[in-house]
Length: 77
Length: 248
Image: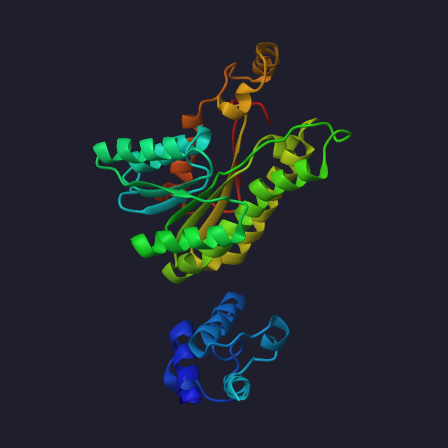
C-alpha cells in the first residue's frame, strides 16, 4: 500500500484542501485550516484506513502531513 | 408547519410516558422513528403496528440505555436501516427515590447510569454520523429538579443536572459542524413516574404551579418538535423549561 498517497487522500478529503497544499511541511492547523474536531476526524480517518489505533498521547505529535506519513509508516512496520 | 418529513430520529426510552409522546409526535410530523425500550416489548410491538396503520415509520429496538455496547449496536441499526440520523432524543430515565441517609450505592449508580451515562452513550455514537452529515439535532430530556434540586432524589437530580452540563459542553464541541444540542427540563408531567405520588402530594404540587395544572407528555413532545425543527436552528446549549411556570 502506498501510505503517502493514502494519507494525502484522507487529508484532502477530511480538510477539503488541494493536493498542491498537502506538502510534507504543511501543518494541519496553521497551513491547512484544521480545527480540533478536524484533527480528531483525521486521526480517526487514519485509524480506519490503516487498521491501526493511535492513542491520544501519540496523536498529539502528529501535527504535519510529514509527521502523519512517518508515524503511520512506522506503525505499519 | 415544521418541515421534518423523512428525517430520521432515535428516541431512547420511547415505549412509555414522555418518550412515547415524543415518538408519536415525531412520527406524526413525518419523521422515521426508531425508539428503544427495555421491558415493554408488548407495548413496543403495539406502537409499531398502530403506526403502520397510519403509514408512519416507527420501529422499536430493545436496548438498555445504560449499556455502552448496546447503544453502539442501536445506532448502527439506525444507520444500516436509514443511512442517516438527523435527530437524537435522549429520553430514557428511571427513578429510585430515597433520602440520602437511606440511599444505597446501587440506587445511586443505577440511576446515574440510566439517566446520564445513557446520554453519553447515545450522543457519542450519534455524533460521528451527524458530523459527517454536517447537520444534527440532539435533544436531552433533563428535569426541573436538575435545576432546583429535590429532597429524596439526590441520585435523579444529580443525573439530570449532569445532563444539562453535558448538553452545554457538547453544544460547544460540535457547533462548528451545524449540530445543535439542547435540553428540555419538564416540570410535573402526568406519567407512570409521577403516578407514584399520592393525591395529597399531587395537590400540594399543583398549588405551586402558576398554570395550576399538571403537564401532559404531549407538552414535552411539542417542545421536542420545536427544538428538532428548523425553527430552532439558531438555538444551542440551552435548557428549555416546560413546567407551567414552576421554576423561574
